[in-house]
Amino acid sequence: MDLGLKGRCALVLASSAGLGKAIATEFAKEGANVMLFSPFEDELKGAQKEILEITGKEPSFFCGA
Image: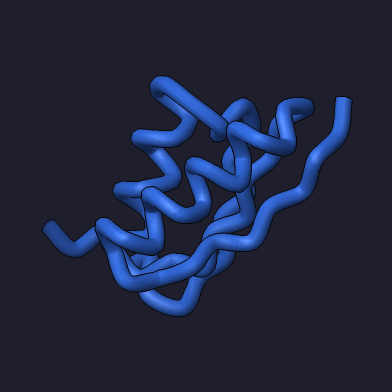
């Protein structure tokens, strides 16, 4: 599916697990530059690695509350 996201930027909140991570993964698959956000740094690092393995695109992340 082409959502027209190639080269676009996407900030996905609550993206260290669950639905947020799934959305971030799909955005990365569509070619978006993804920024993950969550208060859980270790989980963000895991999500970042998993998304990179699945999509070949490494998302950035920001840890905050």
